Image (cartoon, rainbow, N blue to C red):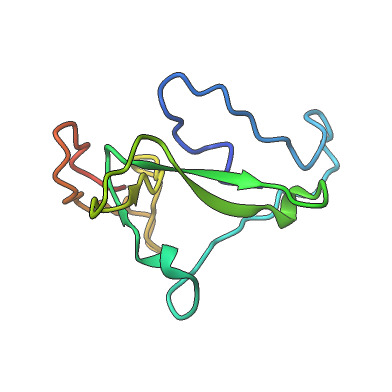
Length: 122
């Protein structure tokens, strides 16, 4: 799935997502691009904010099948989370990865307040 393998990984992560097509298959159609849009419907997870120093991490999970296209996106605790502590995860945008229709790079400032904040979401 386009986008899953291009995300920035946590330091020390050796996670690898399987490819939908053979590496050297020049005749394979391009990998589909997926977007999760929880703007109008979704679980409470759609209200979880971004942080450059998150206490949750995202993992795609396969349940009862091996079809990567049907993976469930799940959030797991990266650290011990104390009661009343805000839940947050890294949205995973690669800097300079969002481009407007006119071809210009879109920049969105990050306001997470983490000590090691990247200062930009994308």
